Length: 132
Picture 1 (cartoon, one colour):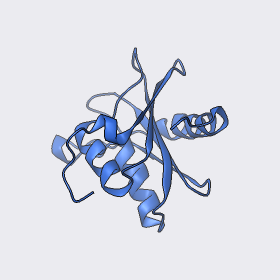
Picture 2 (cartoon, rainbow, N blue to C red):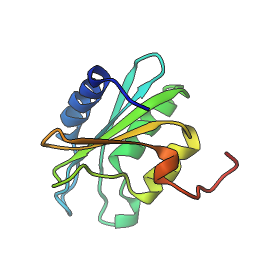
Picture 3 (spheres, rainbow, N blue to C red):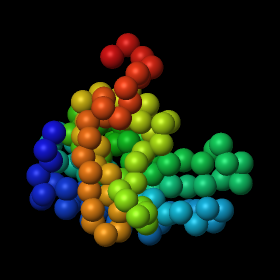
């Protein structure tokens, strides 16, 4: 753990930019996420809501899915940002999917005030489902 300020800044800027693309007509809660690969490529995602709320896709899952679809498998950090009082945390479904594909990744939680909190995904998901 201990992602550099430079990497955190790059992730934050990318997540803030993609957050503007959020499709959140029901909650009006815009979320952006950015994930970085071991070789420095950044992939982003925003939340996309559905009127059938269970079909809603979180920003973190969209960023991870975009990276996976591009063939990436090595990730060092993922950052999530929203307009919250304290740094926003990934939901349980996002935590599980992040763990499934990157069980040692650093999760950087943030807000619009640029406050951050870093945790390893293993510390956020104490009893993960799966073989890892």
